[in-house]
Amino acid sequence: MQSRTAEVAEIDAGVLLGLVDALRNAGHDPVEIARNAGISFDSCETLRRSLPLPHFIRILQTAGVQSRRGDLLWRCGRHCAAHHFEQQFPLARDAVRLGDALKLIELSLKLLQTDSLFRLQVRDGLATFEYQVLDPATWPRSRDVEFTFGFLEGVVRRFYAGHSTTLDKA
Figure 1 (cartoon, rainbow, N blue to C red):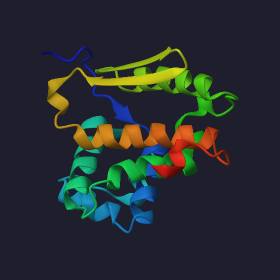
Figure 2 (figure 1 turned 60 degrees about the horizontal axis):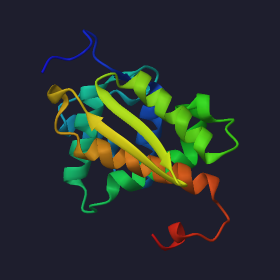
Figure 3 (figure 1 turned 180 degrees about the vertical axis):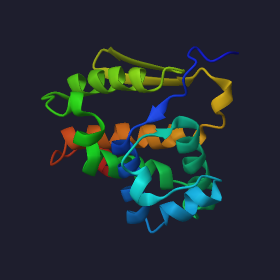
Figure 4 (figure 1 turned 60 degrees about the vertical axis):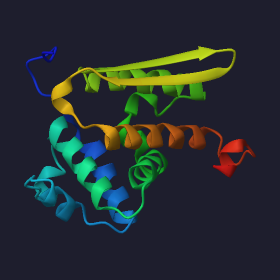
């Protein structure tokens, strides 16, 4: 299957900064992880610009493999939602309702990752978020999916902070 675009998707500096912060918060060295993924990572210069999506994915995969915690990337995604939501998804920062924020995140993700499918559906008060990788050249993506869905859980938690919900038991 050919990529739908000639360009390689890029992860912007805001998302990269969030991941670096989340990895450090979890006790991991993001520069060492990137190096182990075969990516030259000058933390000062790289954090000021975007990173090709395949490099970002390799960093996530390497972090997941090296971690002793199976939920590292999920937790990193939640951390990013708690601490970097406004920088990562400026379109959604002023959303008052969770549904509006998720719709704007869906739109942003569609623009960011053109070789992926993102679909938000709401039926009878239940929201489902579908994420499908369409470009086989960007595999494996398991840790990317964990990070993304951890982020989405973190967004839900942001909107329901202080409310007693079943999320508190997760």
